Length: 431
Image (cartoon, rainbow, N blue to C red; front, side, top):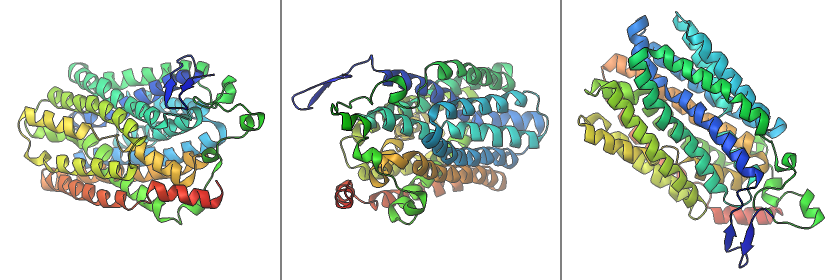
C-alpha cells in the first residue's frame, strides 16, 4: 500500500518510496529547465538590439512567434500525451529545444532568430508546458492533485528564479551566446533521466496511482469515474465554461509571459535600473511565485476555484497598473513580491476546473487548447508591447491595457459553473 489512511481517510501517511515521486522529480527537472529557456527572452532583447541593430518591434515579433508556437505546441503535446504518453513527448520537446538553441550561437540574420527561437524553441517548450504537469498529476495521483500541480507549477517559477538572474549576469559578463549555450547543454543533458526513469502510467511501473487503495479485481482494472469521463473538443467548444476558461487564461497569458515576462526587464532598464538589478527583481518574482504556486495548489484542494482565480487576476491587475510609476528599487521589489505571488498561481485552479467540468480522461487535449489560448494572449502582448514601445516611446499604454484585462478576467472567472453544479451534472449523467 502506497500510503496508510487513518480514521476513515482523515489522515494520510506519505510513502516517499512510491514511484510517483520519481516521476514527479523527473517532470519537475524538465519543467525547471524549460522555464529557464523561456525566461531569457527578456534578457536577449537589449543585447540583440545592440549587436545586430534590430529594432524592438522586430525582436518582439520573434518572441510573439515563439509564444504562438509554444501555445500551439501545448494542444499538440497534450493530444500526443493522451495517445503515446508524456515520456516520448518530453524527449521530443527536449530535442527541439536543443536543436533550436544550438544554431542560435551562429545566427546572423533576423529570419534565423524567428525560425530558431520563434518556431523550433517555441514548439519544443510548448510540448513541455503545464499540460505535462496536468497529465502527470492526474495520472499518477488520486489524492493531493492540487498540491502536485502547485509543486510542478513551482518548477517553472524555480527555473525563472535560478536561470534568469544567472543568465542575465552571464550575458553581461560573457555575452548572450554564453547564456544560450548553457541552456542548450542543460536541455540535452536532461535526455538521460527522462529516458531512464520517466514512465507514462502507474501500470508501466507495476503500481497504482498514489492514493489508490482499491482492492477488488474489478476496481484494479477500472479507472475512477472522473478519469473515465471524456469530453471531445467538439463537445467542449459548445459549452460556455470552455470559453470562460479559455478567455480567462488568454488574459493570464497576456498579463504574464507575453507582457511582464518579455518586457519587464527592458522597461526597468528604461526607468533607470541596471540589467542585473532588473533581472534580480524578476528572480525575486520567481521566488514569490514558488510560494504562490505551492500555496495555490493547497488552496485549490480546499476552496472555490473560481473565487481563487478572481482574486489572482484582481491583484495582478492592480500590480501591473502601478508599473509605469515605479522608479525606486524598493518599489520594484514590492511589485515583484505582489505580482510574483500569483503569476502561475492561476494554473492549479484552471486545471482543476477543466478536469471537473470535462473529465480527466480528456484533460490533456482540452487543457492543451485552453493553454493555447493563454499563449495566444501572450503572443499578442509580446508583440504589442514592442510595437507600442517603438511607436510611443514607453510601455505605459500596454500596461494599462493589461490592468483592464485583468479586471475583465475577474468577471470571467466568477461566471464559470460552480463546482457544486458540476458535481450535480456529473451525477445526473451517470458518472
